[in-house]
Length: 146
Ligand SMILES: CC(C)(COP(=O)(O)OP(=O)(O)OC[C@H]1O[C@@H](n2cnc3c(N)ncnc32)[C@H](O)[C@@H]1OP(=O)(O)O)[C@@H](O)C(=O)NCCC(=O)NCCS
Image (cartoon, rainbow, N blue to C red; front, side, top):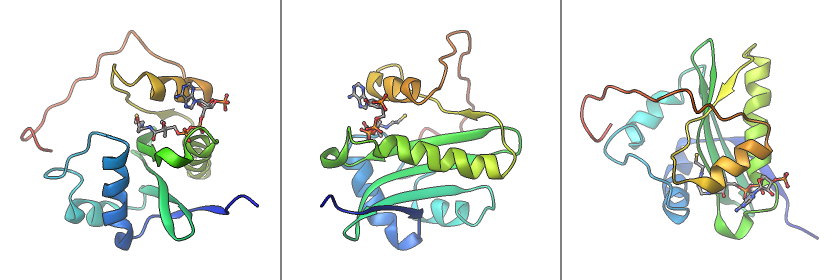
């Protein structure tokens, strides 16, 4: 029988496993910036945070950081552990965030994907997302670590 995978809200106790997962899948993250324990602890207190993990046998095997700004929903840091990829879990995590956003009355969901990340581009396309080649991402940062 395949192992049961549950999707649940992230808890601060999951932080080490979350970072380990990001490392395992080589997902760029900001260990001295917005991904510190302190920043994430603050962020999950916001009512707009939709931070979810997928768990199997008490192991964190997937995660996604969703959020919204009142106008638009965002999907960040989607990750599935290598041994569990290609089995629909990424899609389940995306859909779980989408459902929460829908419940919050948000009708647009967006994500930013690096140019090199063709797998992620394929996954989001297969999950119904459209690519916008006419938009350029601009940001202003306090420092390079944020
Ligand atoms: C992106 C990621 C989360 C996808 O998770 P996953 O569980 O493997 O994805 P799923 O199995 O749910 O696949 C969803 C769809 O994408 C397709 N897909 C998944 N991986 C694919 C690949 N390597 N090549 C082509 N298509 C792929 C699946 O076939 C599926 O399509 P379908 O439902 O029409 O059959 C996973 O590859 C990962 O953790 N990558 C590293 C981290 C990363 O880049 N995250 C994204 C940051 S923007």
